[in-house]
Image (tube, rainbow, N blue to C red; front, side, top):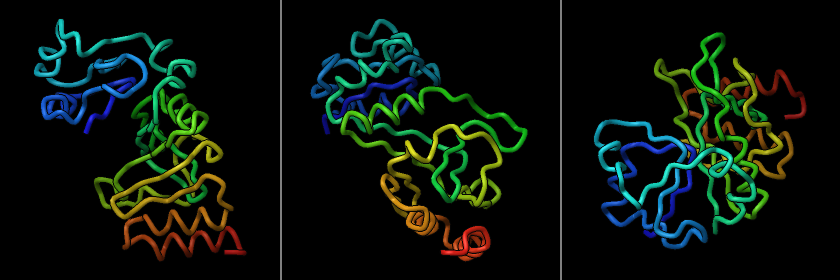
Length: 198
């Protein structure tokens, strides 16, 4: 209840949460009562709802993503997604192999702001892809969007891996625990082949 939204992009689901009173923006510390976003990405329902609605404000990225702005948000919890995460905690949110899917966006800005201001940063995604492949992998197939040194929490439907301040061995084991069960043994074997002290 009484959650606040300060985001680079919002979709249709925000409307349901506002209407149910889940999102009120009453305790953010800035922009009280207003959902802040840089982009609307959804259906006509979202665009109609946002049109001339004083409870939703579109702002440029130099406001939505700037550390000085994000530092004023109380109890900042940044939630971002990933295409894949390697066993050390590096995050790829841009491409799978040669298939470019998205840009860097504001992931790094929000991840760093949350951690630097005493908040929480979460990278959340499903543990498997469309074909059942593991999204927790020994090596990324695309670029590093967020460095492992910046990553705080990684979450899948199988749990949460807290990586901040963890050793390599602890990171690998924590990430394997939240991988899809059918991939865990293979990931452990691959990790042991790469790092002998596991």
